[in-house]
Length: 204
Length: 263
Image 1 (tube, rainbow over the protein chains, first blue to last red):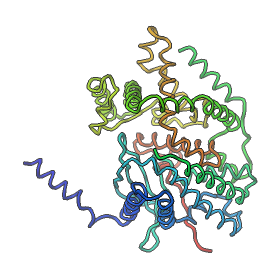
Image 2 (image 1 turned 180 degrees about the vertical axis):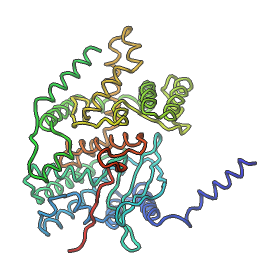
Image 3 (image 1 turned 30 degrees about the horizontal axis):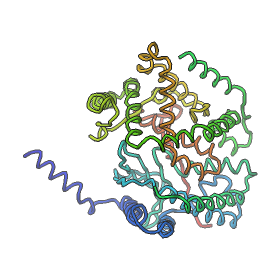
Image 4 (image 1 turned 120 degrees about the vertical axis):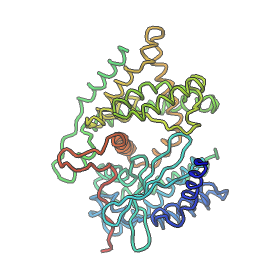
């Protein structure tokens, strides 16, 4: 009987969290739901899925903050045109990088553990992707602007995407005389290769 | 066992030969220190070597393994080799002051060994018992040993001085390796080879995608390795404190992230 009571309390606690969910969690959870339904588990054509993903992803990210961060000291050295061209290429390239990994989705569910304050108006949203084995820890770093949120970093098992891109691009730019245009060209070339390989990729 | 020590020594010798000079420009210096990779030229050369070995031998074998061996059998092989590692994880969990994790590891080991046909079926996983993989590099980190410079090990891939030592200790200390040493001295190599192929097979899709999407694959692997290892160490450190400032140490991802302001 006691067990049943505990179970009932637990059920009421976990089944209807809607009324008390923190807005930042709501933001990430809505985004995840949309991507799972319309992209990862959708039967639509690859092109349609990528377009949907691109749209949602662009809206959810604070692209300028991310771009400024990943270019590090080279951001200041670049002209406005170079920055804009880089941001476009970077956005398209990251979209296609994720698109290349859509097929790895295997019905995993995402659960949210809570939020923590970062500096300024930034928050960490803690989540776990439930895998067959051990869950994968994913932290979403978001900034608040008025009532809305934007993602500035995604941290998977301790690996920050923003920091990883920054390291990688710094290495690339060091070898290429700090010329951001060269990085932009490289990203464009890589994006094209992605499209080529994904078009002849057989569904697994 | 002797050969392993030899390979290890050779690795350390190679390291001593190529060093980058410390840059004087402050911005360059900050990057240099963050990368923690003073042996970069040597590491990159080893990485080139690893990449060519991978393309010519390891990756084709891993692909063949995926093609020839059915999925259920691959899963059984993976579970079996993972189960053989549990005693080492158990000892490391204790050394890290995590008796609770050690208990879960024990439970997992006995369940899988006796109910899961000598570890080939992950019974514990089906029961949602979490898996831990405490290694000696992590133990040293929990004890406060810094990672030391980044090291690209031949064949084995990204590591750092601390983790390379940890890997050596774990390999030499593994009970299954002693137990088989006198009966079948080649066991340790057969095991390493099979585990290597299995690991490579499971990473095929992800590493392909990562390599395709990187403008500097070496730099990408280096930073991902370093960040992930720091997380693993921090997970088992009780409230790590910065020794210089006395403040709680931040996780590697808790860096300052300035927001873009319209000019």
